[in-house]
Length: 239
Image (cartoon, rainbow, N blue to C red; front, side):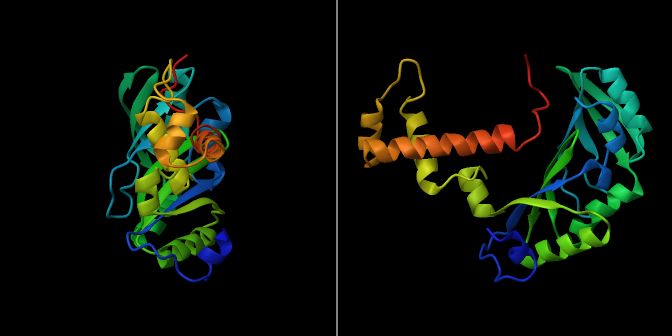
């Protein structure tokens, strides 16, 4: 996929429901660089509240670290925060209400002004991952250019139509891979003992044993990459 072409003038993306863009931004260009620099194990994930006015994005986040008290102190001292209020703590993570600095609000305000909606934000030591819903390709292009003008150099990881994200979970699965994985699950292929053999599953889907094996293997690879390798460590991971 030619991301630069999509963003900077290629033919528009033909998704009537909108475009979802996954963006990676370095913490030093966005938020909590001081916190992540001093607490490499810290992770932060937003509780998204739909915002329609500048300055209203990402007021609530879950934060986690091996040292919760130190995380609390680092968040309060971070240059990107103005006010930090810990609302609750559960299962090794804390819920914070945060008022962000003007510099952070400017990054958010860029996509709000282009009618974008933040769906997810997750940060760790070396990056923030933002998932933003845009109404059209023009809004994506304008936001990208505005971020660059504000000194933010976003790395576009993935561009999806809303229909694709809703249907396939935004996991880079082809329609055939999605069908194979869901059918396998519904027929207890992943249970111990299995409820169906690979041959039986292939007959159910109407493909050869070899074709199904390749679909499952490629589907599993894409799921591992998008859920475990490309995403920040889960906040609520347990030993």
